[in-house]
Image (cartoon, rainbow, N blue to C red):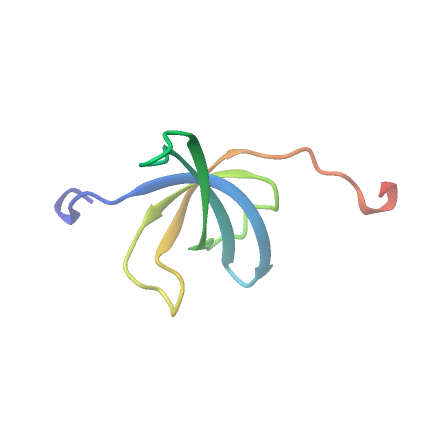
Length: 92
């Protein structure tokens, strides 16, 4: 993948995985407000391709920018950084 140029990478938390081979990742971005200088937290919801279905809700994942895969999908799952502790449904 040397000749492809620089691709953006983002780290975020999976908030949905109900679609086939697709996850929804919430990416947090913190920056100082231009006028008031208070640190503001902004969130983006990105759709990413998960070929093997390995990411679950609550997991911390690394996604990389890719060519458009569908109407909304422009990201691909690179790796699951941290799995969440799974709670059995019977205990809830």
